[in-house]
Length: 358
Image (cartoon, rainbow, N blue to C red; front, side, top):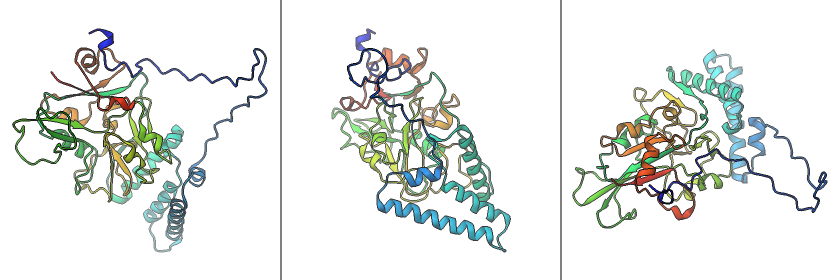
């Protein structure tokens, strides 16, 4: 296929270049510039400083302070109690430390390790069971992407069910990261009139099916609007959320043009026997009430060289996942040999999720 027909060129597949600092336009052509000041050194703040130096309104500030004081009082009470056992005291201390941990994005490797170990221990104390919680970072020369074959999808929703189980999603609600839209043939991609909550035998005559989820945009608008920097794009292209830093304002939900984010109105309920114990801090670990959730390309799997659960579960092979920087990957073959398109390309979000038909 000619290079001018390739639709994926807008995402730079070579390593990103560092931005060059602009000149101050002082007019000097040699020597030093006295008008430019030395950049301030990056001062890493601990969790306490990050919390109380964060920009927030009075309501959220009061809520944060009240929560912290209550937790502190509870921890102090439990620690000083003559009747509390050692595990109760340990749990109170760990919860207190959790309250003042920093933003995961700003943590050092040692701080990440300490945070993961603390969460694993808390899970042991609360459930008497163990989990394998990872903080594995992105690998070099990896940029994840996704392709969806509309002509192969039959609307079975095996992908939806696999996603719910893999990512420890709430079993009591219909909050699903993946949605399969049933659309009428000949009516185009009309999402307003599509049905993503159908209960009948599929495939239905005269209809086709199209899946949506978080598209992990190269220019994600959700990241730009977050007031506390609880969501960001990782080096491998995965857009993640720090659940413990999210304040649940839902600005990101409103900013997403693809309806890719979910807000949990209640604490996710998963029975002990169904909990997926292979977890990642930025992925499928158990979340608290009142935070945002979404697809993470199954970060707990993809960073170990595995396909997301939805890809493995699809019975028709409609889903293709891979490394955009690998010229030999199945995903790159699709992008180079099929007529692909992305939703709302005019917005400039550059989603790393393409559609095509055989």
